[in-house]
Amino acid sequence: MKIHELSVSERIILAEKLWDSIVDENTPVDLSKKQKIELDRRLQAFLDDQDTGATWSEVKERIVGNV
Image (cartoon, rainbow, N blue to C red; front, side, top):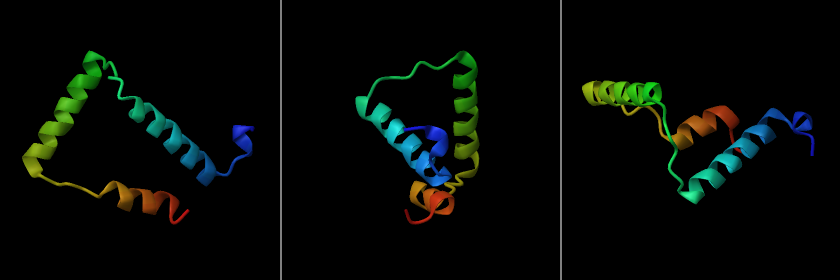
């Protein structure tokens, strides 16, 4: 399979499956100090305004539609 021959939708689905396979392993990811600071900043921003944004299914639907 040549990745560049896949449609954008197919590549997104492939990336999602790859990500799911990583998550399924339940292996911790090492973060740099900069990444940890950014995550803390984003968490604090959420705690300050409580804007939950959109659910993953809503975001995915906007990106790929019904596949």
